[in-house]
Length: 459
Image (cartoon, rainbow, N blue to C red; front, side, top):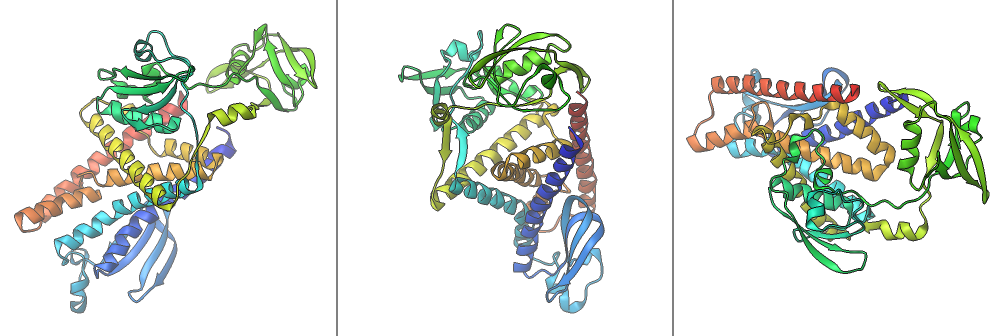
Protein backbone atom coordinates (compact mmCIF):
# COMPACT_ATOMS: atom_id res chain seq x y z
CA UNK A 1 0.00 0.00 0.00
CA UNK A 2 1.25 3.50 -0.83
CA UNK A 3 1.23 6.37 1.66
CA UNK A 4 -1.98 7.85 0.24
CA UNK A 5 -3.82 4.54 0.57
CA UNK A 6 -2.55 4.12 4.14
CA UNK A 7 -3.70 7.65 5.02
CA UNK A 8 -7.14 7.01 3.44
CA UNK A 9 -7.46 3.73 5.33
CA UNK A 10 -6.62 5.40 8.65
CA UNK A 11 -9.15 8.19 8.02
CA UNK A 12 -11.86 5.70 7.01
CA UNK A 13 -11.09 3.53 10.04
CA UNK A 14 -11.28 6.47 12.46
CA UNK A 15 -14.53 7.64 10.84
CA UNK A 16 -16.04 4.13 11.01
CA UNK A 17 -15.05 3.50 14.62
CA UNK A 18 -16.15 7.02 15.60
CA UNK A 19 -19.60 6.52 14.06
CA UNK A 20 -20.15 3.06 15.52
CA UNK A 21 -18.84 3.90 19.01
CA UNK A 22 -21.04 7.00 19.10
CA UNK A 23 -24.09 4.91 18.11
CA UNK A 24 -23.28 2.27 20.74
CA UNK A 25 -22.66 4.70 23.58
CA UNK A 26 -25.67 6.80 22.61
CA UNK A 27 -27.79 3.69 23.23
CA UNK A 28 -26.50 3.48 26.81
CA UNK A 29 -26.84 7.26 27.25
CA UNK A 30 -30.38 7.58 25.86
CA UNK A 31 -31.87 4.68 27.83
CA UNK A 32 -30.06 5.81 31.00
CA UNK A 33 -31.70 9.22 30.65
CA UNK A 34 -35.09 7.57 30.03
CA UNK A 35 -34.63 5.55 33.23
CA UNK A 36 -33.85 8.68 35.25
CA UNK A 37 -30.13 7.96 35.74
CA UNK A 38 -27.80 10.96 35.84
CA UNK A 39 -25.14 10.82 33.10
CA UNK A 40 -21.86 12.46 34.09
CA UNK A 41 -19.84 11.92 30.89
CA UNK A 42 -20.34 10.76 27.31
CA UNK A 43 -16.93 10.04 25.79
CA UNK A 44 -16.02 8.97 22.27
CA UNK A 45 -12.49 7.61 22.57
CA UNK A 46 -10.20 7.00 25.53
CA UNK A 47 -7.25 8.84 27.01
CA UNK A 48 -6.58 12.57 27.04
CA UNK A 49 -9.64 14.68 26.13
CA UNK A 50 -9.20 16.71 22.95
CA UNK A 51 -12.54 18.49 23.23
CA UNK A 52 -14.98 18.87 26.15
CA UNK A 53 -18.39 20.52 26.26
CA UNK A 54 -20.79 20.63 29.20
CA UNK A 55 -24.48 20.86 28.41
CA UNK A 56 -27.95 20.12 29.73
CA UNK A 57 -29.57 20.40 33.16
CA UNK A 58 -27.10 17.86 34.57
CA UNK A 59 -24.11 19.57 32.90
CA UNK A 60 -23.13 16.30 31.28
CA UNK A 61 -19.59 16.33 29.84
CA UNK A 62 -19.44 15.47 26.14
CA UNK A 63 -15.87 14.41 25.34
CA UNK A 64 -13.83 13.62 22.25
CA UNK A 65 -10.70 11.79 23.43
CA UNK A 66 -7.33 11.07 21.83
CA UNK A 67 -7.52 7.27 21.36
CA UNK A 68 -10.38 6.53 18.91
CA UNK A 69 -10.74 2.83 19.73
CA UNK A 70 -13.82 2.88 21.93
CA UNK A 71 -15.80 5.05 24.28
CA UNK A 72 -17.87 5.04 27.43
CA UNK A 73 -20.80 6.58 29.28
CA UNK A 74 -20.11 7.42 32.92
CA UNK A 75 -23.20 7.44 35.15
CA UNK A 76 -23.71 8.52 38.73
CA UNK A 77 -22.83 5.51 40.89
CA UNK A 78 -22.21 5.14 44.63
CA UNK A 79 -19.51 2.53 43.95
CA UNK A 80 -17.36 5.20 42.31
CA UNK A 81 -17.62 7.96 44.92
CA UNK A 82 -19.85 9.76 47.35
CA UNK A 83 -23.26 10.87 46.13
CA UNK A 84 -25.37 13.71 47.55
CA UNK A 85 -28.48 12.52 49.39
CA UNK A 86 -30.84 14.33 47.03
CA UNK A 87 -29.36 12.45 44.02
CA UNK A 88 -29.30 8.92 45.41
CA UNK A 89 -32.41 7.95 43.45
CA UNK A 90 -30.59 8.91 40.23
CA UNK A 91 -27.63 6.59 40.75
CA UNK A 92 -27.16 3.63 38.41
CA UNK A 93 -26.52 1.13 41.21
CA UNK A 94 -29.85 1.91 42.96
CA UNK A 95 -31.98 1.26 39.88
CA UNK A 96 -34.12 -1.86 39.66
CA UNK A 97 -32.32 -4.71 37.89
CA UNK A 98 -34.71 -4.42 34.93
CA UNK A 99 -33.62 -0.80 34.34
CA UNK A 100 -29.92 -1.67 34.66
CA UNK A 101 -30.44 -4.53 32.23
CA UNK A 102 -32.12 -2.19 29.71
CA UNK A 103 -29.38 0.45 30.00
CA UNK A 104 -26.57 -2.04 29.43
CA UNK A 105 -28.36 -3.91 26.63
CA UNK A 106 -29.14 -0.66 24.80
CA UNK A 107 -25.59 -0.27 23.46
CA UNK A 108 -25.51 -3.51 21.42
CA UNK A 109 -29.18 -3.04 20.46
CA UNK A 110 -28.36 0.34 18.93
CA UNK A 111 -25.60 -1.34 16.90
CA UNK A 112 -28.20 -3.69 15.44
CA UNK A 113 -30.63 -0.81 14.85
CA UNK A 114 -27.90 1.10 13.01
CA UNK A 115 -27.27 -1.92 10.76
CA UNK A 116 -31.00 -2.17 10.01
CA UNK A 117 -31.13 1.54 9.19
CA UNK A 118 -28.04 1.31 6.95
CA UNK A 119 -29.35 -1.72 5.04
CA UNK A 120 -32.81 -0.10 4.74
CA UNK A 121 -31.33 3.01 3.13
CA UNK A 122 -29.32 0.83 0.76
CA UNK A 123 -32.37 -1.18 -0.30
CA UNK A 124 -34.47 1.97 -0.75
CA UNK A 125 -31.83 3.57 -2.99
CA UNK A 126 -31.10 0.25 -4.73
CA UNK A 127 -28.33 -2.28 -4.12
CA UNK A 128 -26.32 -3.13 -7.22
CA UNK A 129 -25.24 -6.73 -7.59
CA UNK A 130 -24.02 -9.33 -10.06
CA UNK A 131 -26.30 -12.21 -11.03
CA UNK A 132 -24.89 -15.51 -9.70
CA UNK A 133 -23.76 -17.10 -12.96
CA UNK A 134 -21.29 -19.92 -12.33
CA UNK A 135 -17.92 -19.80 -14.02
CA UNK A 136 -15.31 -22.54 -14.09
CA UNK A 137 -16.22 -25.72 -12.19
CA UNK A 138 -13.19 -27.55 -10.80
CA UNK A 139 -12.81 -31.24 -11.70
CA UNK A 140 -12.86 -33.09 -9.37
CA UNK A 141 -14.89 -31.19 -6.79
CA UNK A 142 -18.15 -31.29 -4.84
CA UNK A 143 -19.79 -29.05 -7.45
CA UNK A 144 -18.57 -31.21 -10.34
CA UNK A 145 -19.91 -34.37 -8.71
CA UNK A 146 -23.27 -32.68 -8.15
CA UNK A 147 -23.58 -31.80 -11.85
CA UNK A 148 -23.01 -28.04 -11.66
CA UNK A 149 -22.06 -26.64 -15.07
CA UNK A 150 -20.41 -23.46 -16.29
CA UNK A 151 -22.88 -20.61 -16.99
CA UNK A 152 -25.53 -22.12 -14.69
CA UNK A 153 -27.53 -19.40 -12.94
CA UNK A 154 -28.10 -20.07 -9.21
CA UNK A 155 -31.78 -19.33 -8.61
CA UNK A 156 -32.05 -20.54 -5.00
CA UNK A 157 -30.09 -22.35 -2.29
CA UNK A 158 -32.03 -24.45 0.24
CA UNK A 159 -35.19 -22.65 -0.85
CA UNK A 160 -33.72 -19.15 -0.35
CA UNK A 161 -33.86 -16.97 -3.46
CA UNK A 162 -30.42 -15.77 -4.59
CA UNK A 163 -30.71 -12.66 -6.72
CA UNK A 164 -27.00 -11.80 -6.57
CA UNK A 165 -23.61 -13.35 -5.84
CA UNK A 166 -23.57 -11.55 -2.50
CA UNK A 167 -26.83 -13.25 -1.47
CA UNK A 168 -25.63 -16.60 -2.85
CA UNK A 169 -22.33 -16.43 -0.94
CA UNK A 170 -24.03 -15.44 2.33
CA UNK A 171 -26.64 -18.20 1.99
CA UNK A 172 -24.00 -20.84 1.19
CA UNK A 173 -21.94 -19.76 4.20
CA UNK A 174 -24.91 -19.83 6.58
CA UNK A 175 -26.10 -23.24 5.46
CA UNK A 176 -22.61 -24.78 5.35
CA UNK A 177 -21.76 -23.50 8.85
CA UNK A 178 -24.86 -25.34 10.09
CA UNK A 179 -23.55 -28.51 8.45
CA UNK A 180 -26.49 -28.65 6.06
CA UNK A 181 -26.46 -29.96 2.50
CA UNK A 182 -26.72 -27.32 -0.19
CA UNK A 183 -29.69 -27.81 -2.47
CA UNK A 184 -29.15 -25.68 -5.56
CA UNK A 185 -31.84 -24.80 -8.03
CA UNK A 186 -30.10 -23.65 -11.19
CA UNK A 187 -31.05 -22.57 -14.67
CA UNK A 188 -28.72 -23.85 -17.39
CA UNK A 189 -27.66 -22.29 -20.65
CA UNK A 190 -30.55 -24.19 -22.26
CA UNK A 191 -32.95 -22.38 -19.85
CA UNK A 192 -33.89 -25.70 -18.21
CA UNK A 193 -34.30 -25.72 -14.40
CA UNK A 194 -32.33 -28.38 -12.50
CA UNK A 195 -32.24 -29.32 -8.81
CA UNK A 196 -28.78 -30.28 -7.55
CA UNK A 197 -27.48 -31.51 -4.20
CA UNK A 198 -24.02 -30.49 -2.96
CA UNK A 199 -22.88 -32.53 0.04
CA UNK A 200 -20.80 -30.11 2.14
CA UNK A 201 -21.46 -31.76 5.51
CA UNK A 202 -17.87 -32.99 5.91
CA UNK A 203 -16.35 -29.74 4.69
CA UNK A 204 -14.30 -28.01 7.41
CA UNK A 205 -13.85 -24.83 5.40
CA UNK A 206 -13.52 -22.63 8.49
CA UNK A 207 -10.26 -24.37 9.38
CA UNK A 208 -8.57 -22.49 6.54
CA UNK A 209 -7.24 -18.96 6.87
CA UNK A 210 -9.48 -16.53 4.95
CA UNK A 211 -11.97 -19.37 4.47
CA UNK A 212 -13.09 -19.58 0.83
CA UNK A 213 -16.17 -21.78 0.64
CA UNK A 214 -16.64 -21.31 -3.11
CA UNK A 215 -13.12 -22.54 -3.79
CA UNK A 216 -13.57 -25.60 -1.57
CA UNK A 217 -16.86 -26.46 -3.26
CA UNK A 218 -15.18 -26.01 -6.65
CA UNK A 219 -17.10 -23.01 -7.96
CA UNK A 220 -16.02 -19.75 -9.52
CA UNK A 221 -17.87 -16.64 -10.62
CA UNK A 222 -18.53 -16.35 -14.35
CA UNK A 223 -16.77 -13.42 -15.94
CA UNK A 224 -17.27 -12.39 -19.55
CA UNK A 225 -14.19 -12.86 -21.74
CA UNK A 226 -13.49 -9.25 -22.70
CA UNK A 227 -10.02 -8.05 -23.76
CA UNK A 228 -8.59 -5.22 -21.64
CA UNK A 229 -8.10 -1.73 -22.97
CA UNK A 230 -5.30 0.67 -22.03
CA UNK A 231 -6.80 3.57 -20.09
CA UNK A 232 -3.58 5.44 -19.27
CA UNK A 233 0.13 5.00 -20.03
CA UNK A 234 2.39 6.16 -17.21
CA UNK A 235 5.40 8.25 -18.18
CA UNK A 236 8.80 6.56 -18.10
CA UNK A 237 7.45 3.01 -17.91
CA UNK A 238 7.95 -0.08 -20.04
CA UNK A 239 4.57 0.47 -21.74
CA UNK A 240 5.59 3.93 -22.95
CA UNK A 241 8.93 2.57 -24.15
CA UNK A 242 7.10 -0.13 -26.15
CA UNK A 243 4.84 2.46 -27.82
CA UNK A 244 1.56 1.61 -26.09
CA UNK A 245 -1.06 4.39 -26.14
CA UNK A 246 -4.26 5.14 -24.27
CA UNK A 247 -7.21 3.54 -26.06
CA UNK A 248 -5.25 0.53 -27.36
CA UNK A 249 -7.23 -2.74 -27.24
CA UNK A 250 -5.06 -5.75 -26.33
CA UNK A 251 -5.26 -8.64 -28.81
CA UNK A 252 -2.36 -10.92 -27.89
CA UNK A 253 0.85 -11.04 -25.86
CA UNK A 254 3.72 -13.41 -26.48
CA UNK A 255 1.55 -15.46 -28.82
CA UNK A 256 -1.28 -15.84 -26.27
CA UNK A 257 -4.70 -14.50 -27.19
CA UNK A 258 -5.66 -12.09 -24.39
CA UNK A 259 -9.41 -12.29 -23.90
CA UNK A 260 -9.57 -11.19 -20.26
CA UNK A 261 -7.71 -8.84 -17.95
CA UNK A 262 -6.61 -11.60 -15.55
CA UNK A 263 -4.58 -13.34 -18.28
CA UNK A 264 -3.09 -9.97 -19.33
CA UNK A 265 -1.95 -9.21 -15.78
CA UNK A 266 -0.62 -12.76 -15.20
CA UNK A 267 1.45 -12.69 -18.39
CA UNK A 268 3.03 -9.35 -17.44
CA UNK A 269 3.69 -10.27 -13.82
CA UNK A 270 5.22 -13.63 -14.74
CA UNK A 271 7.59 -12.38 -17.45
CA UNK A 272 9.77 -9.69 -15.89
CA UNK A 273 12.67 -8.64 -18.20
CA UNK A 274 11.36 -10.88 -21.00
CA UNK A 275 10.87 -9.27 -24.43
CA UNK A 276 7.46 -10.33 -25.80
CA UNK A 277 5.59 -9.56 -29.03
CA UNK A 278 2.43 -7.58 -28.36
CA UNK A 279 -0.47 -7.06 -30.75
CA UNK A 280 -3.02 -4.28 -30.17
CA UNK A 281 -5.90 -2.73 -32.05
CA UNK A 282 -5.52 1.03 -32.46
CA UNK A 283 -8.10 3.12 -34.32
CA UNK A 284 -9.34 -0.03 -36.01
CA UNK A 285 -5.85 -1.01 -37.19
CA UNK A 286 -3.72 -3.95 -36.04
CA UNK A 287 -0.43 -2.72 -34.52
CA UNK A 288 2.54 -4.95 -33.56
CA UNK A 289 4.88 -3.92 -30.71
CA UNK A 290 7.60 -5.39 -28.50
CA UNK A 291 6.99 -5.20 -24.75
CA UNK A 292 9.55 -5.91 -22.01
CA UNK A 293 8.07 -5.77 -18.48
CA UNK A 294 10.44 -4.28 -15.93
CA UNK A 295 11.36 -5.97 -12.67
CA UNK A 296 9.48 -4.76 -9.60
CA UNK A 297 9.58 -5.89 -5.97
CA UNK A 298 6.08 -6.45 -4.62
CA UNK A 299 6.15 -7.37 -0.91
CA UNK A 300 9.20 -9.54 -1.42
CA UNK A 301 8.05 -11.05 -4.74
CA UNK A 302 9.73 -10.14 -8.03
CA UNK A 303 7.11 -9.40 -10.68
CA UNK A 304 6.85 -7.80 -14.08
CA UNK A 305 5.48 -4.26 -14.32
CA UNK A 306 4.82 -2.05 -17.37
CA UNK A 307 3.21 1.13 -16.01
CA UNK A 308 -0.34 1.26 -17.36
CA UNK A 309 -3.86 1.61 -16.04
CA UNK A 310 -6.24 -0.92 -17.57
CA UNK A 311 -9.95 -0.78 -18.10
CA UNK A 312 -12.43 -3.42 -19.23
CA UNK A 313 -15.18 -2.00 -21.42
CA UNK A 314 -18.20 -4.24 -20.87
CA UNK A 315 -20.64 -4.27 -23.80
CA UNK A 316 -24.09 -2.99 -22.88
CA UNK A 317 -25.84 -6.30 -23.62
CA UNK A 318 -23.47 -8.21 -21.27
CA UNK A 319 -23.77 -5.54 -18.59
CA UNK A 320 -27.57 -5.81 -18.67
CA UNK A 321 -27.31 -9.61 -18.54
CA UNK A 322 -25.14 -9.55 -15.41
CA UNK A 323 -26.43 -6.55 -13.47
CA UNK A 324 -29.20 -6.89 -10.89
CA UNK A 325 -30.57 -4.09 -8.73
CA UNK A 326 -32.39 -4.99 -5.52
CA UNK A 327 -34.67 -2.08 -4.70
CA UNK A 328 -37.67 -1.90 -2.35
CA UNK A 329 -40.14 0.52 -0.86
CA UNK A 330 -39.81 1.61 2.76
CA UNK A 331 -41.70 -1.31 4.36
CA UNK A 332 -40.12 -4.08 2.26
CA UNK A 333 -36.68 -2.46 2.55
CA UNK A 334 -36.99 -2.43 6.34
CA UNK A 335 -38.11 -6.07 6.41
CA UNK A 336 -35.20 -7.09 4.16
CA UNK A 337 -32.81 -5.11 6.39
CA UNK A 338 -34.12 -6.84 9.53
CA UNK A 339 -33.73 -10.26 7.89
CA UNK A 340 -30.19 -9.52 6.70
CA UNK A 341 -29.16 -8.12 10.10
CA UNK A 342 -30.52 -11.26 11.78
CA UNK A 343 -28.73 -13.52 9.27
CA UNK A 344 -25.41 -11.72 9.70
CA UNK A 345 -25.76 -11.76 13.50
CA UNK A 346 -26.54 -15.49 13.54
CA UNK A 347 -23.64 -16.25 11.19
CA UNK A 348 -21.22 -14.22 13.33
CA UNK A 349 -22.35 -16.04 16.47
CA UNK A 350 -22.06 -19.45 14.82
CA UNK A 351 -18.53 -18.76 13.57
CA UNK A 352 -17.52 -17.56 17.05
CA UNK A 353 -18.93 -20.79 18.44
CA UNK A 354 -16.85 -22.78 15.94
CA UNK A 355 -13.77 -20.84 17.09
CA UNK A 356 -14.42 -21.75 20.73
CA UNK A 357 -14.76 -25.49 20.03
CA UNK A 358 -11.80 -25.55 17.64
CA UNK A 359 -13.79 -26.10 14.43
CA UNK A 360 -12.64 -22.77 12.97
CA UNK A 361 -9.11 -21.41 12.65
CA UNK A 362 -8.10 -18.44 14.81
CA UNK A 363 -6.27 -17.23 11.69
CA UNK A 364 -9.66 -15.93 10.50
CA UNK A 365 -9.69 -13.35 13.31
CA UNK A 366 -8.99 -9.81 12.16
CA UNK A 367 -7.80 -6.81 14.16
CA UNK A 368 -7.69 -3.05 13.66
CA UNK A 369 -5.15 -3.15 10.81
CA UNK A 370 -7.27 -5.40 8.61
CA UNK A 371 -10.43 -3.48 9.53
CA UNK A 372 -8.69 -0.21 8.60
CA UNK A 373 -7.63 -1.70 5.26
CA UNK A 374 -11.18 -2.75 4.37
CA UNK A 375 -12.57 0.54 5.66
CA UNK A 376 -10.29 2.39 3.23
CA UNK A 377 -11.13 0.11 0.31
CA UNK A 378 -14.89 0.34 0.89
CA UNK A 379 -14.72 4.14 1.22
CA UNK A 380 -12.81 4.38 -2.08
CA UNK A 381 -15.35 2.19 -3.90
CA UNK A 382 -18.31 4.32 -2.89
CA UNK A 383 -20.87 5.27 -0.28
CA UNK A 384 -22.93 2.09 -0.75
CA UNK A 385 -19.94 -0.16 0.01
CA UNK A 386 -18.90 1.98 2.98
CA UNK A 387 -22.42 1.77 4.44
CA UNK A 388 -22.38 -2.00 3.93
CA UNK A 389 -18.99 -2.19 5.69
CA UNK A 390 -20.31 -0.08 8.60
CA UNK A 391 -23.37 -2.33 8.92
CA UNK A 392 -21.24 -5.50 9.05
CA UNK A 393 -18.84 -4.05 11.65
CA UNK A 394 -21.79 -2.69 13.68
CA UNK A 395 -23.37 -6.17 13.74
CA UNK A 396 -20.04 -7.68 14.82
CA UNK A 397 -19.73 -5.15 17.64
CA UNK A 398 -23.28 -5.86 18.75
CA UNK A 399 -22.75 -9.63 18.83
CA UNK A 400 -19.34 -9.41 20.52
CA UNK A 401 -20.63 -7.06 23.20
CA UNK A 402 -23.45 -9.45 24.05
CA UNK A 403 -21.10 -12.36 24.74
CA UNK A 404 -21.21 -13.38 28.45
CA UNK A 405 -17.65 -12.20 29.06
CA UNK A 406 -16.94 -9.93 32.05
CA UNK A 407 -15.77 -6.46 30.89
CA UNK A 408 -18.28 -6.60 28.03
CA UNK A 409 -21.95 -5.61 28.14
CA UNK A 410 -22.86 -9.29 27.92
CA UNK A 411 -20.88 -9.99 31.09
CA UNK A 412 -22.90 -7.39 33.02
CA UNK A 413 -26.13 -8.81 31.60
CA UNK A 414 -25.03 -12.25 32.80
CA UNK A 415 -24.56 -10.85 36.33
CA UNK A 416 -28.04 -9.27 36.18
CA UNK A 417 -29.56 -12.61 35.15
CA UNK A 418 -27.88 -14.23 38.16
CA UNK A 419 -29.21 -11.41 40.35
CA UNK A 420 -32.75 -12.00 39.06
CA UNK A 421 -32.48 -15.71 39.84
CA UNK A 422 -30.91 -15.43 43.30
CA UNK A 423 -32.70 -12.26 44.39
CA UNK A 424 -29.56 -10.28 45.23
CA UNK A 425 -26.64 -8.70 43.32
CA UNK A 426 -23.45 -10.62 42.57
CA UNK A 427 -20.78 -9.88 45.20
CA UNK A 428 -18.13 -7.27 44.48
CA UNK A 429 -15.44 -9.94 44.95
CA UNK A 430 -16.98 -12.14 42.27
CA UNK A 431 -17.26 -9.14 39.94
CA UNK A 432 -13.59 -8.28 40.52
CA UNK A 433 -12.50 -11.83 39.64
CA UNK A 434 -14.70 -11.74 36.56
CA UNK A 435 -13.17 -8.43 35.48
CA UNK A 436 -9.69 -9.92 35.61
CA UNK A 437 -10.76 -13.01 33.65
CA UNK A 438 -12.56 -10.86 31.09
CA UNK A 439 -9.55 -8.57 30.67
CA UNK A 440 -7.26 -11.57 30.13
CA UNK A 441 -9.59 -13.08 27.51
CA UNK A 442 -9.95 -9.79 25.63
CA UNK A 443 -6.19 -9.16 25.66
CA UNK A 444 -5.56 -12.68 24.35
CA UNK A 445 -8.15 -12.23 21.61
CA UNK A 446 -6.75 -8.84 20.59
CA UNK A 447 -3.19 -10.17 20.58
CA UNK A 448 -4.15 -13.01 18.21
CA UNK A 449 -6.08 -10.62 15.94
CA UNK A 450 -3.21 -8.11 15.71
CA UNK A 451 -0.70 -10.95 15.14
CA UNK A 452 -2.85 -12.14 12.22
CA UNK A 453 -2.96 -8.58 10.87
CA UNK A 454 0.82 -8.29 10.95
CA UNK A 455 1.27 -11.67 9.23
CA UNK A 456 -1.07 -10.57 6.44
CA UNK A 457 0.98 -7.40 5.96
CA UNK A 458 4.32 -9.17 5.63
CA UNK A 459 3.14 -12.13 3.55
